[in-house]
Length: 218
Image 1: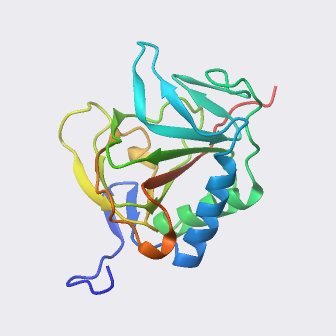
Image 2: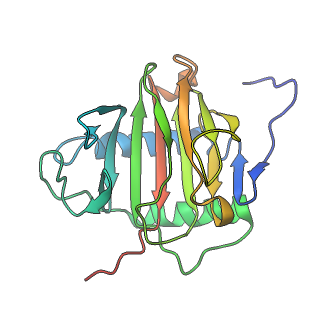
């Protein structure tokens, strides 16, 4: 919003979990959005993720570096068109490292970000409570929001139920969780359709999530 009654500020939601509002300015949001649009094109483009039980996630997804599928990683889109996953660019690694430094005050020099999961939400999409637990690395997860505002539910490491905290994530916001919060359950119970900044040119919400896989090359 242009005129906040109470300006938003950096907030520690839980030990190791930090929300940094407006981390990406509008120019950087536009550049990241343009990159997402290129990554979403086939081959290995935006797809609907299907669960082993036959259900489908309402948020659609494209991956970089390694392809995530329930519940593992591959170098090709094994549950889609079979194409090789798109490469993870060096500038995203630098963006992830800078995000961790700004949010947690520590630069993870030994942890090279090498996986991106990019989820697209329309107004009806949701994401159930889950943990990011398919990686071998415990490096912090970096989450960047573009477009519509969402309710981001950040919980605990033991259960999908309470206690949890609901955080409003707007376009340009950064959320980082590592340390004791790295394996916490989290989800998106609501997206506020039409709430994104008009100047961005995005209908819906994009969430760019950066991770360190920790897998051996061999």
